[in-house]
Picture 1 (spheres, rainbow, N blue to C red):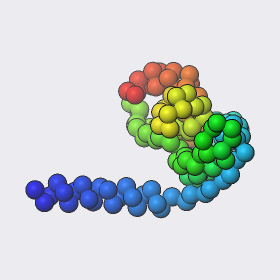
Picture 2: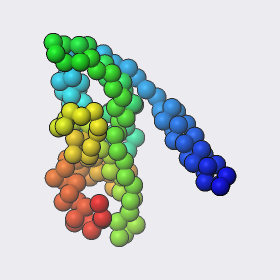
Picture 3: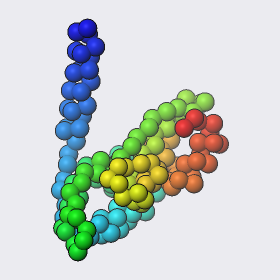
Picture 4: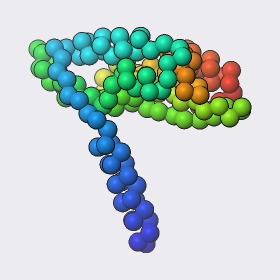
Amino acid sequence: MKRPITFAIYILLMFSVNLFSQETTEKNYNTFSEFLTEQNTKISRIENGFSLLQVKEIMGAFIIVKVPKIGKMKPLSQLFKQPEFTKETTDKAKNIINILWYFSTPKDQDGLMSRSECTPVVIKNDSVVGKGTKFYLNFMKKEQIRF
């Protein structure tokens, strides 16, 4: 009985260390749209051939987005992980494929992030090969990688 509890505590500690070891910045915006514009501008700067490090430098670290109360809208103070989701896999030729999803398009406004609200950036052997949902789906199908 002690092993599963010990293992669960270990996993929780590892997750906590990873989360808190990330640099986090806090930024105030006048509107949420202002944050989205900045986020999409950063994504548009990512070009094919950029390395994983270059992508992370452009997109920045974890960010706490703060937006004041406007009319009936509640104030916002939310953490965006930069990237929100990541996946590392290999293709048949054993090339390393990294997929990073960056928040870009809110849909449900329920406070929960989903991949459908993010722009994927596909990196093969430390070089960006494309970005965007359409590119991602075509790439995964062409490379016969399960997703």
